[in-house]
Every structure is written in C-alpha cells, then in structure tokens.
Length: 536
Image (cartoon, rainbow, N blue to C red; front, side):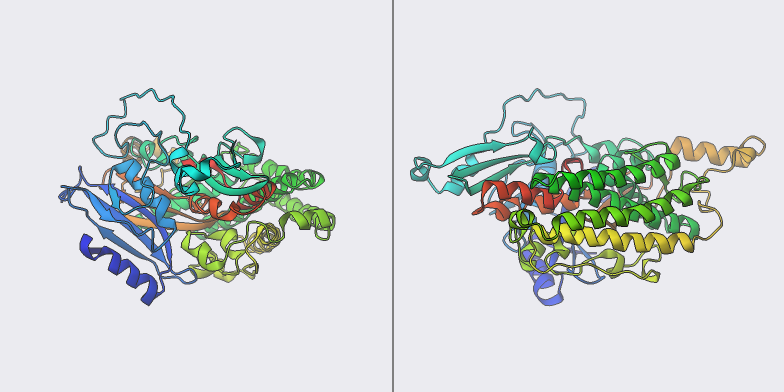
C-alpha cells in the first residue's frame, strides 16, 4: 500500500496501469476515519489493483481535502471505475470531478445523506416511494430531443421479470427488435450488508455473507473468514484447508449448474434444466447433512470450521462424482450441435479481453475472453498448486464461451474434489489459538481459565490487530474480495465486499446495444448476475 496526494493520483494510477502491468482495477472504496486516530482529512479513498494475470497486488490510498471532498475521476482510465466511484459517492459523499454520470447507484435517488458515514443516524427512517424513470440517463444516450421524437420505443425489462434472474431492471430503447441503448438500474436488493457488519462481532458477519451469492454461499463464508485469518496471522489446519477446498469446488459446481441450467432455459432448451438441477439437489443433500441448511450454510468459522465432517460425507461426495459426469454428458449431447442453441449464443454478447479487463471482469466471464485469470493458479491458497487441474479459457468472449467455460470448469472442479478427498488429512479442524477458538466444553465447566477464555470470545469477540487488510478467493463468479479495517476492538470498523457481479453487470449496456432484444436475455443469463451479491 502506498499513499498519494490528490494532485498526483491520476498520474500514479496511470503509471501503474501502463508501465507496471496493473491493468485490472479491482475495486474502489472509502474509509470514514472519523472514529480513528489521525482523522484529518476525514476520508480515505482506496484503489485496489492487480495484473489481469499475475500475483502482485497494490493498494493506493488518497485523502481528498475535507473542504471540497472531491478527487479527479479515473473512469476514463478504467471503465470499472464508473460504477465504483458512483458507489463511493452514494455511500460516503466523496465526489469525483469530471465523472460522466455521478449519481446514486445502490440507494434510492431521493435518499438524503450517505449511510456509510460514521455519523449517519441508522435509526433515521426515510419514506422513498417515487420510482426513478432513468430518463436523465436515456436522454444523454439518445443525444437530444430530436431522437426522442423518432419511432424508437422505450421498454422496461424488470425488476420483476423471470428473464432478469432476480430484481434487476433495464430500460431499453428499441428500434424494432434492435436494442439502441440500455440503462441498467440496480439496488433493489440493497440491504446494507456493510453497515450491518459494523454493528456486530467479526463472527456475527459470517451469516450475512451467506446472503451475497446465495447459489454458492459457502464460498462467501470462506472468503470472509480467510481475510480475518490473514489479519490475525492464522493458517487453518491442514484438514480444515482440505475440507474448505472440497466445499469451494462443490460450491463452484452448484453455482455453475444453476447458471448453465437457467441460461439454457432462457434460450428455449428446457430439458437440460432437469438434468442439471437434479445434480444440484444431490450436492445440496450432502451439504445439508453437513451443516443443516441447503442454501445458507454458515459452516465456516474464523480459524476453522463449525465442526468436522459427518459419517457418510465421503459416500455422498462419491455419489456426486459418479453421477454428475452423466448429467453433463447428457446436456452436451442435447445442445453442443443443436442449431437453435448455437444460433442463440454464438457471437452473442461478445466482449474483447481488453474491454473485459477495463470493466473489471474476473472469473469465468474473463476466462471466456481468453484470459487465464484464476486466483487458484495466480495466488495459490489452501494447496491449490498441489492439485492436478487446468484453467479453462474461451476464445471469443461471447455467451457460448461463457456457458462452455462453466461446463468444463465443473469437470475440473470434480478432479480437484476427487484428489482432495483422496488425500484428506486427519487432525483437528480448528486452530489451537485462544484468540479465535472456543475451548472444549469439558474444560469450560471445570477450568476457570477456559471459562474466562470462552466468556471473552463470546462477549467481546475476536480482535484482529488495528489495521487494514484485503483478502480474496476465486469464487464461482470471479474474484470475491473483502477489504476490512480493524480498530483493534471486537467489532469490524469497516467491511467492504468486492462482488464480481457488480463489475460484470456494469458492462451490460455495452454487451447488449446493437443486438436483438432476445439476445439480451441470452447474454444476461450467461453473465450469471446474482442480485444478492450485486446489491449487498
């Protein structure tokens, strides 16, 4: 991490991109330092960058002066900065000069105040009922009043529409069936994850992470806990790491099954849905037996796991590995050479690797463009470099490649799961560290030191040292990151999620404009936008 003055911010960021290879702007956020030492100037704006392929990572921080609370935009350097800066403005009130569309993005257009400021009164209720017609953005795209009088038609798709895969809305300007312009609107599922995270202990945040990408919620648990463990300097036990690998890959398979199944339904291939959802249900059965929940798992703990594997877990996983290849083969035989399917997805919603990187794409959507970006290879964790598997990439970056990258990734995940189960080590699943692990009940009932240890962790929470940390994993949709600020107490000072969906969906207008309206639905399905993660 290094700090720069506002006057040199753009030059530093441009230099990092052009001369040092940090071409991927992962996230932009802010820290309100009102309750921290050294609170002048009050706000820190944080830029997190990495190369599109590589393991380095850099964090640039800049404090805008309190008098005007503004910085120059970098949305002309990275397209990902457009929505990221809008979110910082929305949540903290920091303005970005020369931004092309600096308006709220997660909160309602008439919302008063900035909710992630430390002095915002969360009990202050606001009644907001007037919908946003989005015409301010559409008029800019149309280029003036003359075009408004043309024969184009405005159509709202969503927020309640089965083709939108969640509470998403897009206002489209149509000429016949051709999409001329698209204005997306998000925030319908914004529930204040980051504000809620500041009100409880670090452990209390784990169930909240389940509600991000709820199609693979265990991956969110692991990403968050891994970040807190990084702050504490803790490495999970060998058994816990291997179990996490198994769960990460099962989560990836579950997520990809939902994405591909729904995407195929979108283009008229309904039968495949049943083949793929039967396998997802099979995995849910195994996960439910492990943690008692099918969708929101809450199984991972800081320093380990809630408990060890149950008897029968291994047989359940063997059943998944035995049956899933058959289902994938059936789907492949139905669609791989199906003319209707190919006409609906080949060349549809295509994006180049360069544009995808500028928009902040990671995960399958970036790999479909031919970029072998994968944290499991670039920054191996939990022993991923010890497994035999391949990174799958596409060539065209269209809907077809996004579907097929996911299909092949499921096969690679099965390879990893099989190897992990085969070499599953013994031993405990929680670290022997009194800062994070509760002592055994037998000791709590008969030992005053253990009783006090238990009491401190439950009542005061786990206490990472004061400081800042960014941690991430390769989740099903791409790099899922958590930027956490600790003030040394048992409650997080700040938790910011870097959701892969957020940056992928920001490119939706680019992917749909000029195409047919039916292509819009096929494109959206292939992006796998999960509103719970997008809006947080």
